[in-house]
Image (cartoon, rainbow, N blue to C red; front, side):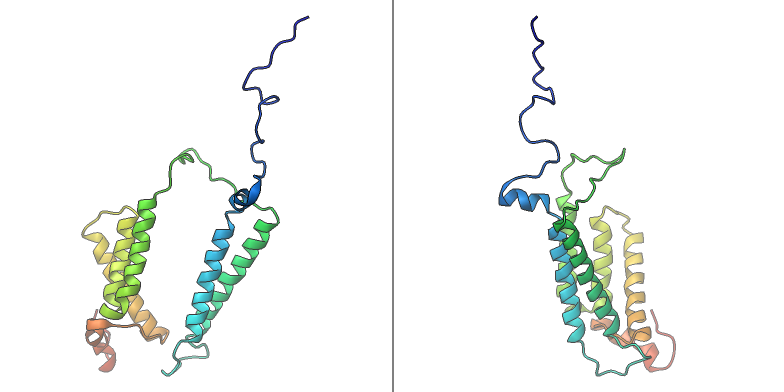
Length: 201
C-alpha cells in the first residue's frame, strides 16, 4: 500500500521551532525577556524621583506633619519596588499576555509619531519650566499631550490646559507648600495670597 505523503504545511512535519518556543543565543534571550526594559525604566524613574526628593530644599515653612519630601520618596520607592518585582517575575519566566480584542490589530506597527510627540512635549516642559514658569509650561504640556494623542479641538483644549495648569500651580503652592516656578506670571498669581484674598486666576 502506498502511504499518503504529508502536506508541506503539516504541523507534525514542518521544520523550525515551535510557536512560543524560547529563542537561542544572547539576542534571543533578551527578546524573550524584553519586559526587563520596562523594569529598567521604572527603576531609573524611581531613582530620579528619590534623588530629587532628597535634594529638595526645605527652607520654607512646613505645613502639617508631612513635609514636601514625603510623597516623592514614597512614589520613588514604589517605582523601585515595582521594577524589582517585575524583573524578578520576568527572570522566572513570566511573560505578558499579548493584547487581544476585536478592535485591536496586533499586526499594526507602533505609533512612533505619537511617542515622539509626547517625548518632545515632556522635554519642552523640562526646558521651559524654569524660563517661563509652570503656568505657561504646564499649559503647553497639557495641550501638547492632548494634541499628540489626537485631539484637535483648537478652543476647548487650550482652555482646559490653562485651567489644569493654574489649578495645579495653586494646589501645589497653597495646599502642599511646594513652590513651583511662576515665571512672568508669578506676581499676578501671588497677588491674592499676599493681600489675604483669593488668588486671581
